[in-house]
Image: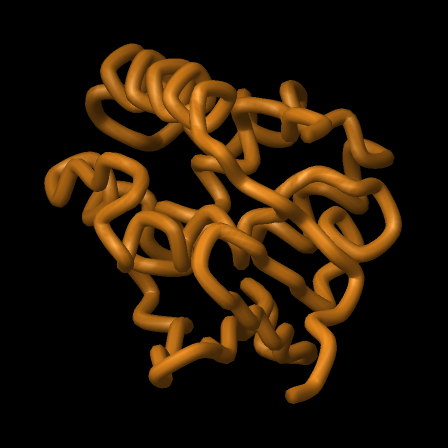
Length: 143
């Protein structure tokens, strides 16, 4: 599995902090930071599919998949770190930095307390993700 930039975990934190995730039995709906898009994440065991661009086109787990994995308890979720990541305009930042996710994250974290801890948690989360037996697909086959 192709690995996402560690900064995508920060975007997942924001999605959780902003309560932009609606969990269902085998799927979830995750709204974008600006509210203009809603992505569908589906899973069957350790196989995940999502309509977000990173997962669908780039082949790595985008923030909607990462947020779902956190909500499912498969990736660690630090409540304090998550709370401090609320209301960050990721879409605007990623566009302004032309998809330089490190630069976007640096700007996002300028006003956030515990930013060193948050980046460490994101890197630890990515390390755990690398060890997971996770399969990504563009779409799950309908039964």
